[in-house]
Structures are given as structure tokens and as C-alpha cells.
Image (cartoon, rainbow, N blue to C red):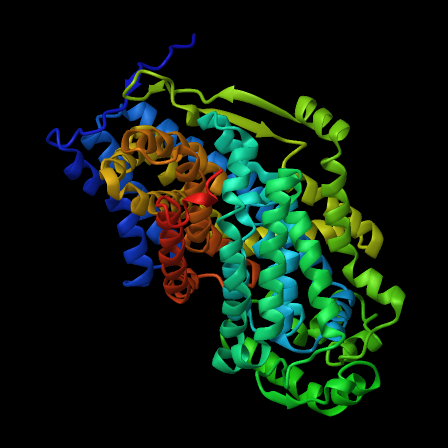
Length: 604
């Protein structure tokens, strides 16, 4: 017999009837999480579990949530972590490991370096442009995982690959996964979709403008900015302009596709007529370069001596910082030769060569990523998308939960949409199977590599499950709402705090879509109370929220796992927190100016 759970009503100020005191306690799990990672340098899974326990105790003894519903909320968060988030990461990393087990990974590295053997430019092309294209189609952790793997294939060290991939995954996020965050915002606020799209498209382009410059700085410091600012600026301007035009005048779902493709075309066109004064290769050393002889035979001549030394240097340094075998970048040709039955041939040496491989080899080396794009593009065809939505998923109420907010309305987070066929992870699994067929990888080897992938990700799985469980306990108990309402009660200062609310939402959930669903209506209600534009504040939640994604523990764990450096989440946090907060300050200033007559004309 089924016994329904007793209804639990969220309370905004349960601690001494004080909203301020309640908000301070509600923020403790998040503060503890970041302090343990950034200051005490605990392992990510340990920090996640401790913060989860604190949030459960607060839910039970502070907010008065029944034990059975608290445990049910914890289970819901863990399930959501596995499906869809970890389902995406596992299959994305599996595809990467499939390529590592063949000679084509080295050929991919040669192909990428034949476009440019300068890691600063490759960071723009791979992390910023290709990552944006992946974000537009897949979202969640797939762009970070795949872009980081490709950067390693190009010769970048694992830790730097993770940092670059995380920071690049900002500007396209608001329109990622076919504009899912904006569509979710429209659903919870009732503001017209085009109005929200237009407003967001007048904020995120300013992020796009500076991100490529930050990327080249991360790769090569001040020298990188000094020598490659023209192409970085072109990439930022083209992406931002395309994002603005597409979001304001075309189809919102295709905003990032248009921006990514336009930026790739612009960067490649510029490289035909311009090259940096020096090339920065795999070792981080500057190589003198005659701009007229960057490509073709000159690249092959450079590879004969300098690149061979660089390949050795990269292999030595990568092994030195404790990465796993999957993270050996382009230097692990010997291991891949064994994995592929000794069929490496010239590709093994080609991993240290910058000459462009034959056309057939180029196509085969990039085939897994082309397969991903084709599979995801097919899934967006209206007829297929409608079929997948109808038969490929189910929406149900999570058992053991009956939660209403302080107004008596049911909380949406207790209803789960379970997409089994339509899920990004399932589409990646299909892409992986097609890659196996193309590369003629035996099913037994494919299953073995899948098992090795799961083993590599074991602590990442614990981390992501604990953090998402933390998120759902905070959301369903009312801790997150208390925190949001406290920020929204700031009156006229809310225009300065609204971006912070979105940033907290994404840093907590790892998803701009989830943050918009969580705080979107709260932003609108606060805006109406304070006389601000509801459209502006709702869009601010999404635009500023994307800057918190690089710090969310699940994304840090995904990036660390993707480059084979488990346990470096705290290091990534310390490397990125300054950039995240700096960009947040800039976005906050822009949104505040848009709330005043100075830039008020930008609000539709």
C-alpha cells in the first residue's frame, strides 16, 4: 500500500523569525564547500559530502523538513546527477578514450596543429569556437570535457587544458542546448521568449568580447595578449555581434550555432593574411616564425627538429604532474600503438609533426566530433525532436516528496523529466557506438574501455552526486529560496544584487537552466517591487549566471576527470575564482547601467 508523504511547507525565515539570520545559515553549505576546496584543499568528493551533511542537518533542524522528505530530496539530487549530468560525462569521456586507443588521436593532433601550431590561437578555435558549437547542441558538461581533450591532443598540458576549457564555457552558455536556459526562463516568468532573448543578447556579447583575450593570457601571459590580441579581438567581436544579431532578429535556438560558425570562419580567414610574430608551441617556448611560411613545407621542416623536442618535453611534463594514462596528451604514441595493435605507423611519428595529414586521414581523425555534430543536429529536426520528446522521455513526480512554497504552490523541482532516448548522454552513446563501427573497434574492446572510463571517474561520480544532492536538499527545504528572498529585499540595490543571485544559482546547480528555473520568477517579483524592469532582471539572472559555471563543483570535477587529473578541483577553483568574480563585477556594472537612463535604451 502507498502512503503519501505529509505535506511540507517551506518557511522563509525559520531561524528566530529573522530573514537575515536564516539567509546567513542557508549560505553556510555553499561557503563551507568553497572554503574546504579553496582554503583547506580537501578533495572534491570530501568537500561535497561534508557540505551535503550540513545542508541535511539545516533542513532537518533549521527548516523543519521531515526526515523522509529530506532523504528523498537527497536521492532525487543524486539521481539527477547520474542522469543526465554524469551520463553525459561518462559517454563524452568514453568517446575520447576510444580515440586515444587508436592511431587517429595522434592524427587529430597533427590536423589541429596544421591549422595553427600556436596554442594561443588553438585555444580560441577549440575552446571558444568549437566549445560554443558543442554548447549549442549539447550543453551540460560535454563542451568542457571534449574541448579539454582536443586541447590536449593539440599538445596543451592537462591542467591548462582544463582551465582554458572551463573559462571558455561562459559566453555561449545562456543560449546553450538550443537556448534551453532562455526557454526555461520564459516558462517560469511568462515574459515573451523573444523579449528575453533580445535582452540576454544585449548582455552576453560583452562577455564574448573579452573571453578570447583572457584565454590567450591564460595560455601565454602578457606576451600572449601582446602578440595575438588582433585575432582574439576579432573572435570576440564576431562572436558577440553574431550572438546579438541572432538572438534579436533570428531564431533564438540557433544563436550559438550562428555565433560559433561565424567566428570560426572569421578566425580562419584572418589566419590566411595574419600570423603572430612568434609561435608558442607545446613546450611553451617561442618559435621564430616567418608569417609567409607558417604552413605547408615549412611546418614539416619545423617538425623535423623543434617539434620532436617539444613533443618529448610535453610528454615528460605531463607525466610529471601525475596525470593518468588517458591524459598523456599527444606524447603517448607508444601506448596508443599498443592499444591499436601496433598499427600506428607514420601516425606515431606524426604526433610530433605539424604537417597536414592526407585528406582521408584528416576526415577520419575528426570523424568522432563530426559524428557528434551530425547526431545532435538530426535530433533537432522538428519531426525527430517531437518523436524523441514523445517516446524518448517521461515526466513523473519523485516519490516521497510533497513540498509547497510559502505561498502554498507546489515546488517544481520535485517533478522530474527523465529523457532516456532524447538525453544528451544517450546521443553521445550512439555517437560512440558509431565511432566504434567507423574505427573498427571490437565490441569487447569498446566495453573494456567503457569500464576503464567508469573506473577513472569513480570519485568524480561521488563528487557530482553529493553536490547535486546538496543542491536539491537546499532547494526543496527552502534554504535557497530564503537566500534569494534575502537578496531580493535590498530595495533599490537589487540591480546590483540580481546578477549575484544568478551567479550563486549556477555555481550551486552547475546549470544556467536550473538557475533560471530556480530564481527566474523571484527576479521578476523583486523587480516589480523595486520598480525595475522585469525583463532586465530576468535576463540578468541568466547572463550573470553563466559566469558561475566555471566554479560549480560538478563542472570542476568534469574538467578534472576529462584531462585525467582527479583531485585537482581545488586547484582549478583557485585558478578561476578571480576571473569569475572579475567578470561578474563587469557584468553587474553593465546591468546596473542598463537599469539607469545611461543604458536604459538597451532594454526592449
